[in-house]
Image (spheres, one colour):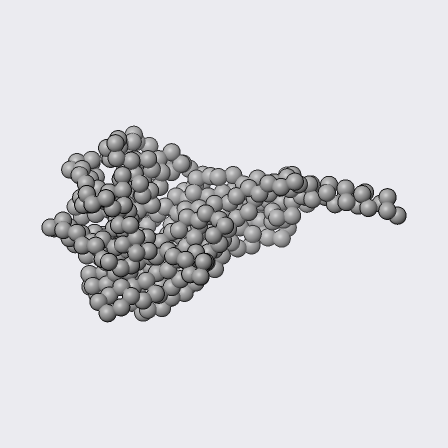
Length: 374
């Protein structure tokens, strides 16, 4: 009977190899969809992959933080706004002052200012050997906060005088609320050797933690911390792109939904939205748009933050036999009527597939009029 063991082992190896080699491969795509869920199509007009993170003010005014700060319109040429010798050192945060047509950004570890048309560029942070990042306008637009070597720095926009707080020293992004004279900041630190991220509030009396999240340090995450346009809600999430796992049996892909943490500074309440791929605040300030893992797909939802009731914007179907595997970022236009997605799509696993991880089309309903996969 011992002669059968190698055969059994070989059969198991062949089965596992078949599972991996026949795995449908996800594909990165760029898409556009109306806020009401209509008009979904693949579209790279926003040029996210070419120019860097997008800030979608209007169809005629789109800013990007990549190697440089640039602007363009849908279908129009690209204009560089930052000097060639000042590379962008924070590609996540751009403070946009629409009233005065000004942009604040971090280049060469300094905070700089420039007009929408590239005029009046200059460095505004002190030349103090500090590493500056994460510019953010205050709730009434009279102050600018930034992070200097983990500390919160604040500038009076009228006088351009800076104040650096001695504590905290672990901040990554901070907002100053003028109505309450408080700082809300996102922090990263080690808690008993576990990487931890927290939203904290700092006022004249105390420094208090509002929400915190521990995460797996074995993976590099994109820490997405944001504040709503009305400065009432704060949110944080760890986003990670799908990765390909290669072993002796072949390759397969893994996606990473994670909890989305939201805090309401008016009520003091916090809550979690589970299994999220990414999120953004609705430009109106009273809703949050997020993609979650549901029925094996990445759909798109809109939550009314006053009621915490969610409605579906998009079910995750690209077409009858292609579904949304993951969504990496959501870029809403500032009027809230249109949004672009940086996402991943994947074909359905059909009856003759040996893949063990792709959803089977018979397990979830295909859209009406769907063609038979394969």
